Image 1 (cartoon, rainbow, N blue to C red):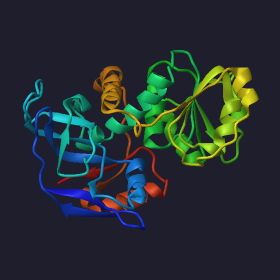
Image 2: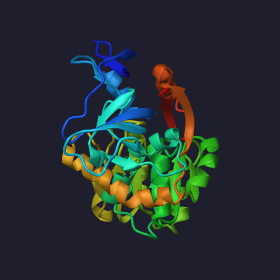
Image 3: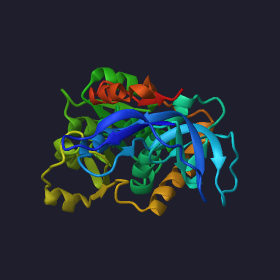
Length: 323
């Protein structure tokens, strides 16, 4: 088979579409013939950080058909359409734990199915598991045009949060985000986030912020939170450094929560996937979840796909199609 391989070097990883051995499903594993795979910021970060060590296959999410079921696996059959979360998914075949897979609802294309797992698992973990959102609470999503942010907007809206506020530095992007459940858009290039949030919440502040920007909006986020508000931090697209006013933290009784998969055990990762499947698959099956595809590329053009993501012009997912 062929796969997107990352060869480490002192200057960072080199990405190539290479021939490698086809994996074999062992006990407790399922082998999937990949039809589409998502591109994520984490893929680009891993390439940048690959300065030493062994080569590896890129990718963390996929959609495809079960090609083989290993021993001790029950409830799955060859030929079933599935989507899931597994390292090495940017390849013609990938091995997956059955607990990291979900069946693809009827009517979803391969590209749409591949657009669901990583962003909705990550967003669900931020909004529901860590953010503990409840119906009627107000939510702010920073950097709202990325795949995880668009998923977070939809999850908050579907679970009854109100108002759902989204910030972006692009007015055009904010216009396009309205259809995903945004009640109030904040143009961060020329508008005060704090003023906009207070106007939308009767000067109370928001109950939950899901932040993908980091240090450049940290102080504004602290000021935008209501008493007992929660700030869930999932990315640092703006900056990884910030100063904190401990008086604000203390007076408002705020919770600051960091979320990542890097330090999770395999058991914890699978729990996140199962929690997302439990809460979100019914909405997906009912057609209430939108899976916006910004652009698709042939998997052999993965370098072009990563370059497009780095331009930050996209809304929604960038997908690699496997012939």
